[in-house]
Length: 203
Image 1 (tube, rainbow, N blue to C red):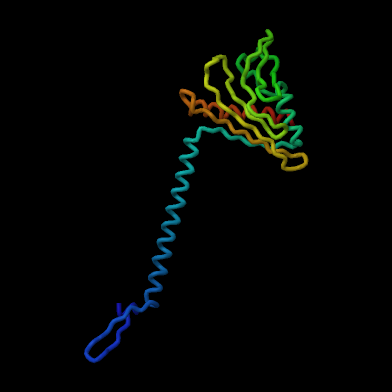
Image 2 (image 1 turned 60 degrees about the vertical axis):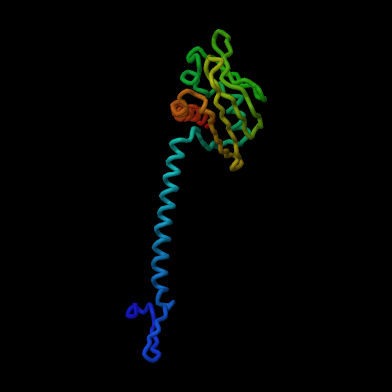
């Protein structure tokens, strides 16, 4: 340690007094400080990546975002009032080809429902919140089982330009299903189909 400059020595008669030289230890402190900082930073990044992947695998939520070149008011109106013109009822309804119209009641507790050629009105969901043209929330159960679990989806319309609107949809509440992951996994591509039809219609 003497040769390395880590300690100093002073002779007093027949004694030698050794003292630690702080400046000698500075390089070691800096080295190990940098070493452990790097190690801990790498560990932190690894842990955050693992947490992110775990969250992506376990989160029972479907999130979608699209941007359309329409004003917020137009984008909202076309999504709601004109739903019958763009919703893919052949593949995303209860009665498929027998559906002739889509009912959309624009108020809290209003129905979203399909109308068949026989005049039957079959409910898909109910409006939970209504904030035109900012968005709305829906209690969702597009099937004939009255006791079936209901999920929830919320859609928001945000103006990001005079004629540009960002639309964000979040579908959640899958935990009550017998196979929640499977239900979520069906809605994930399902919403892609629905929203692509909307974008095509609005363009």
